[in-house]
Length: 639
Image 1 (tube, rainbow, N blue to C red):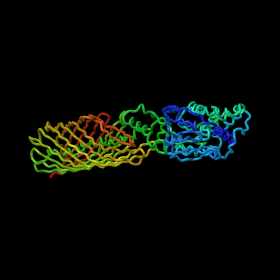
Image 2: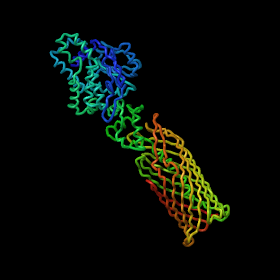
Image 3: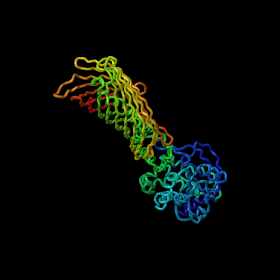
Image 4: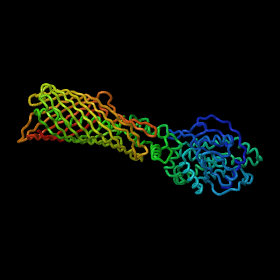
């Protein structure tokens, strides 16, 4: 039967090629006079649409009959960027009509039916009726499914089509049977509906109409009637193969995997080459960071990660099948970098809080010093919103300083410290290590003990930054490291007044913080970002009320309880962003924390024994979608 098939195909090599008028089509696929069945698998006049809002890409896979181009058509073919040609014919067919080689293209022979043929003329085929010829063509298509040898050759063909870097062309003698089945399988992988696949298959009759007519005209009428079914195609031919797939494997997917032995990854590579998805699952309902992430994932379809054996291609095709992006839309953009920058911009308040109990100098006499240390730890969580995923911040640090009272009106302090932070958000973590130095002073024209005062504080520090993002979806972990600096200053005006056993210190001021983080390149994932440097400034108005109560004697110890409440209002834009780049594409992400107003409150107690004092404090903070708590231990020595 295989020899009869080859003989039927040989008829086409003996036919007279008819001229085809060139058409202007969106796919820009040329119509070749000397290779009349040359066309793009992606469509005839326009690119086909596929399941899941996909559009087939032109210029990926071409199909044709034997490559015997005229000089003009050869020049056209050479201009299409075809990198590989797969000849599906037998050695006998190739010897009778060898291909013309294309410039820059490799040539491979994958003999689908196997064996050889004598190249006998169609008149030697022993058919007695058109029905016999039709039955043979149907049986041939069934053999594409049930014949183990053919399946092995198709396995090689589809694996090589997946691996080729560039456009590929496959063909047999007439470009209709072996080539037609190959095209139908590819289009099925792409997600075309059955009617479109069949319509494309039958287009051979239109493309080769002139040649079919001339070939039949050259035969005696009785022979033309019998052998006519061998020259063109009929729907029943392809349908016989498709029905065999259903009967033997149940689904086309099972045929691909069980029958042809193709891996899921190879199937996804072929689909990634052929199809661009105009929308991704669930993307229309996204906003903010997730929408930006989904857009990046969609745009990457036009990168060299798509249609290759890449983690990205496997992820995206899996997401299309699952109808879900699986959360990668939230992790891919690097929101954690914006979250970390937002966290760092609020570290100035932590430094002020750490030093606050000892910096005023109100408990010192002129010329006295207080050596002090403080340790703080805190947590702040921000709920997710439509714009950003939730984030959480853990911090701990220590500071050592010295305060001196220079006069009745003036005290000053200096200190250095270390703060370690961990920021988590959108599948990522960032570790920040800040080593800083702080200075400040208080001036009270009527004396530090009561009345009007002015506080001025400034800090600067060196920052080490490390990040790790678990992207999910099999895309690996993107890791980055950088460095930078953090500076800040606070200026406040207040009034200190004793009232019935309580000393109150209300104050109003402004705080400015600036973070400068160098840009860096993440590593460890195909979707690792080239992260821009982050240079952000935060300005805010602050209001605080500190209350310290009259000392309580407890044996030799003296306990001094206190309460503090605070309010901070951001001036200007509250949004903190990060920006990254991947393969020429940009993505911007917004930090989860974007509160304009933040409230704090806490209680503390100091225990004094002679020149020594120790203390502790606990507090809470909140505002908008954020909530947190903190605590600290303090110790000092007066001399």
